[in-house]
Length: 272
Image (cartoon, rainbow, N blue to C red; front, side, top):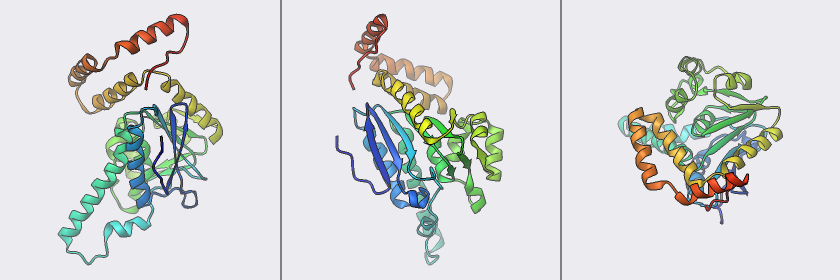
């Protein structure tokens, strides 16, 4: 398994777990054009690696992610010389492309666990909203910062976060842009757990990831598929889909392995 070369990300692999680090520490991991593109390339590549069963999204440096790199705004908004309708179409295509860049995290068939320390604002919220689970340190803080830049957040926060935190809280954070700390983030369900420091957080997140990696990969991928589908469809459609899915995708071999291992008090060894 030879990963692609990235300039803004760093990858590590251990026991079927891939850890993706945002790697622009000198820029507080601000999301420049390269990072947006590399996030999509990275998660689409990881999706296709059978030996990778779980992914952790973390960051190097003092901050998790300070949001979109402001230098990118000039490229997105243009120089003002283009005809307005054409500039508007170009801006729409750019926004759709950025949505697709982060959408690759959500669309990845493997569970993605975000491990967040210090700042996570703006585009960082868009990013972690695409993840399946979120964990943070006591020093972490979060903000839907776009409103303070006279913008409506447009890369996924307003679409995904209302399925994660209560609607009233969501509205308040989106309208005010106020910063919330780790304790509040846990109380509203934005993060699953809070840890004293980065080291203890990473140890705990790796333990959760390993627990998932020990399960049947087919069952895990099916579970993620169903959870995302159920979020966006009525219960009746979700029930119909899982019936069809298991009729075609349920692995009898994996079920027998799991039953036999449980009877012996052992971990089943599933194929990738």
